[in-house]
Length: 171
Image (cartoon, rainbow, N blue to C red; front, top):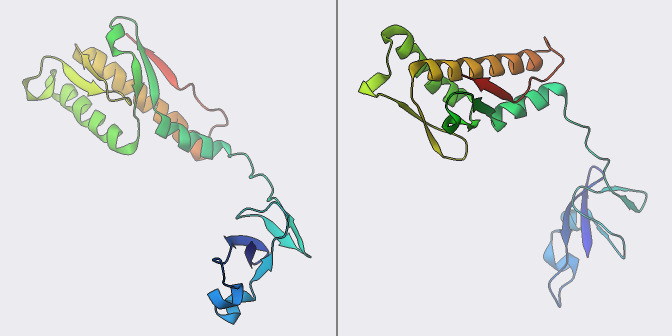
């Protein structure tokens, strides 16, 4: 087996097909990038220097801002004290926030759910649809998601140094 090296990093592992040499498989300029692996344990991403392969260093842990950005994608766990059927982990990505805000704005302007609905169906991240029975409960849900995302945004911007809890309780 051969390792193709680019800037001191293994970028490809290659074993010529039976009956062929490396030189028969590639242009001489490409062949010059390969070194024989021998018995070394090697994988793409390993470092190569002075005839020695070494595992790459472990990546640094994610920054607090990266953790906050990832948390947005993991959603917010909601617990309802009055309607346990609403309990679930809900998405809070940008597209979902926009949908939540549209419904919350309609409620704020009209005092009722849109489209003549008497309850607001809303899926959690697993796809289970929950029925918000009152506009107050949906508004509390929208408030909880907005608070959570704003707190995460503050961490992302470096204005806060603590991740918020990924859960909220609504009435």
